[in-house]
Image (cartoon, rainbow, N blue to C red; front, side, top):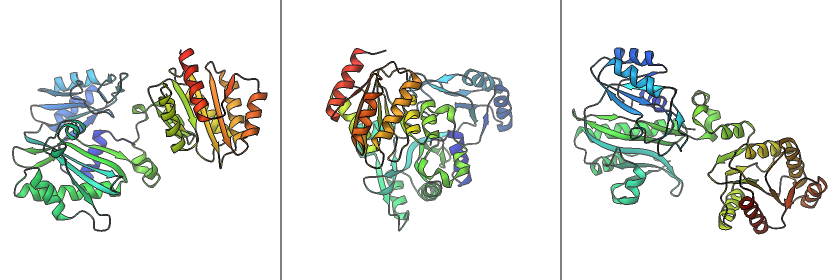
Length: 390
């Protein structure tokens, strides 16, 4: 689950991580009042969306009067901001963050994430702050500093000093970085985060460290332990189909292709999508109905896939281990009848009660094609999608 910048900065402030003074606003009038409350002669108005690249897309504006703050907020609020991370549809702007500007001497990058290969929490830092860290890592990997935290020992002072020296900090700045890293690590652990990113972490002209931006991703699997964090979810920033899938305990991620995929098991789902690509197709989604699914859940999954207008064919690939293939067939039949499917459907069933499931599909007299193997299924669904694109 992603947090907005202002929500992430709220957690930063709670953990005593230095941030600029700021106020949020949901209307132009609130933005005007926020500027008056902050005082000063200049302000930054920042659109709050779950996407990077806001500045280049016009979502971060520096203005010189409360009236200009109100005008900038009026332009942003209610619009959809399109960035290189948002997709062509953009994301809705329902709130802005009004902040006092910062006198910046240097921009750095600092992030905390889970390094699954190392099985450790990792700190990443770079003197190239304010840039896309992925581009820095790809073009100049030597400029990315990494240190891993042993879960038994915790973050060590020498690790903080190492990153501080690598970033070119001096004297009290290294001590300040160590304190900031310790608080970031505590926040990361206590909130069950998967990513905490400060980009840029700035050195002000006064020589102080300040988190100018904040990004936090939370582990969905741990949200049950953090109801106060789960309440921060902004459904308007998420794909409606993904939200609907979560309500039915389905794992669904929307993709750019036109072949809908319904599979049980994340590994099998990934293998299925790979094979669709190998045979010349493009998956429209990742959808895992789970190992202990029911006919009703399969029906909901089918309707979810077909709610995507890009889908021109559907591949169902089920291996019946815990789940019975006849129950899957029952759900497919119910969904096809209810939704009045207008695209080709290819089904491959293998495992527990697969023969019974295939017989049910044949007896239904519905336009459902079956396949004996996954390769055959991939061939059939790709051919069907090419011949029946909407």
